[in-house]
Image (spheres, protein in one colour):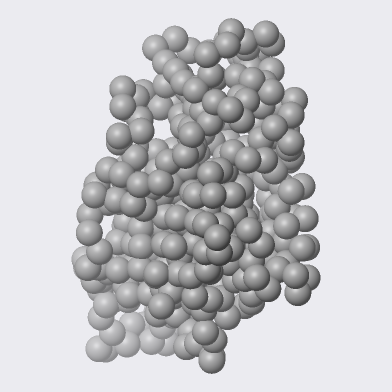
Length: 383
Ligand code: FES
Ligand SMILES: [Fe+2]
C-alpha cells in the first residue's frame, strides 16, 4: 500500500505541440476608415488553432467551467484548456482545483463524465487511484504482485495541477504561473456591472448546445456586435432596437450595450426587451447583464477550427425567486436566440471556404468596433 504524501504542487506548465511553419495573420488594414476582418485561414487552419492554443489559451486566464458543477466535496468534471484534457475537482477539503485529466502512469484520460461525491478518481486502465486533491493514493501491483518498487515515490506522481481560481460561479485556469491575479483580469468588467451583487447569482438553468459547427472566434464576434440583432433576432430581440445600442471597447473588455426605455408590449420573458450589457473578456469569458435581475454566461470550448462546444447558464440575481413559468419562458427564449445565432455562425464558417474571404470582409466602423478590438487583442497575442 502506498502512502499518502502531499501531491506534486508545482503548477504544470502547458506544453503544446511544436508549430510547423505558419505565419499568423497581421492586423488587417483599415481602408478609408473601414477595417477588414481576419482573413479566412484564421478560421479554418489547424495551425491557427494550434497557435491560439499555445499563445492565447495557454497564457491567459481562460474560462473553463462552472463552480456549481462541482459544488460538493468529491464532485468533478472533465473540460479542456488549450486543446488539452483537464478536470476540475472539489477536494474533501472543500477546495476547487484543476488538473491535467491524464493518468501519470501511461496517460489514460481519467474522467470522461462528471462524478458526484467520489472518494477518489480511479484510472480505468490499471487502477491507479488519485485523491480528489490530486495525490496519488494507490498504484496497485506496480512493482509486482502486491509490491511497490523500492524507490518509487508516489508524492512525485500526483495529478499535474494547473493554476486555477474561481470568481463567483466561474472557474478560470491560467497555465502561465507568472500571469497576474484573476482579480485584475475580471476587474475590467466592474465599471459595466455597477450595482450588480454577483454573490446573489443563482443558477436557473444550464443550456447545453452541443457542438456548433463554427470557429470559436465567430461565436465571440457574433456576441459582441449588435448590427445583426434587428435582422437575425427580429422577433426574439424585438424589444432591443438597434438605435438603442452603444459600443464598449475598453482594454481586454469589449462588447456592446443597449438602453431600452419603451414599455415592453410582450409578456415578460417572451422576448428580449430589457436594457443589457453584453461583455466579453479576452479571450473567452462571455458575460451579459440583463437589467435588473438576470445574468447569462456562455462557455465556448474550441474543439477544432470549425467546431466549438457551447453552454449557456442563466442566473437570477434579484431578491425574489422567479416564477417557474417565467423561468421556463426564458429558457425557451434563450434556446431560440442561440439557435438563431448558430444558424448564422455556421453559415459564416461555410463562407470561410471562399477565397473572397481572403481579405477578411469589412467591419462596420460603428457597430463592429468590438470585433475589431477582439482582432487587435488576438493578433497582438499571436505574434
Ligand atoms: S494508465 Fe492509468 S493506471 Fe495505467
Ligand atoms: Fe445574436
